[in-house]
Image 1 (cartoon, rainbow, N blue to C red):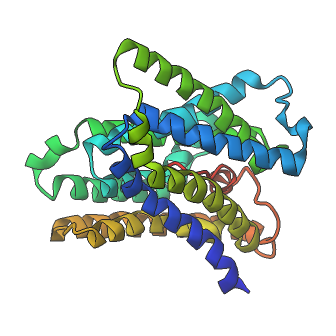
Image 2 (tube, rainbow, N blue to C red; image 1 turned 90 degrees about the horizontal axis):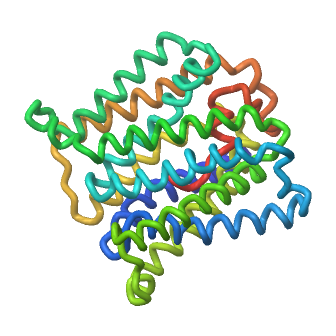
Length: 325
């Protein structure tokens, strides 16, 4: 039974790992902001539709928390996805995926800063090891390669930090279902993207895509919306319910592995230092999740079929796992 349950989070992370090369190819035809906006117009509509079907019209009411929902939606969805797409113009999909894989660790640092919940020293040390691995991938082990970190790396730091703040915000919505929190914040973020995209088009910063461009990226857009934004999220939440948060979180480390595999299949040949850096990053993230799992095991044992507590940092990540990334 557990092997069958593992198929759900496995499907989710494999979908997210493939997403980065898919988006990178679409950016050759459509500007990052317009691509992000188009993607989430469809995704938010589907999520809101699912919310209406499952919880009814009453679930659309924010209950006086509109400002909070809007801020989290802008920071999480608009900020993370726009910065990620902009970074994909500056760096490779595999580098971007490695940054995204550090989100659970960054989320714990955000909790420390905002709530005073100090992570275990082992987690802080493993965070530094993971960042060292990312640095090896980007610089190829040479100090001269630090210049390659560039704007794309800075954007991904901002993207991951924004997603961590958004993830932490889920702890204040414990009475909402994961679907409700995701759908309403996604809608708020999409409205912000739409306004920013329209403004950028009018100002000439970017150009609205032609019909031929949208047709050309239709396969990529369909994948990013249907597979990565809808099917993957539903599979992820099902896996969390059946396996428990700590077990499901371990699958997140397969995101950069999948992205590397896709790029290699497309002809990319990583150097030895890059492979070592990727291995170091993934090993550090696996170890960090094992440390967290060991700490939360008393609450998880026998509770795999119950929703994870939102006070658990891994569970917070689980509650708002959406395609994005």
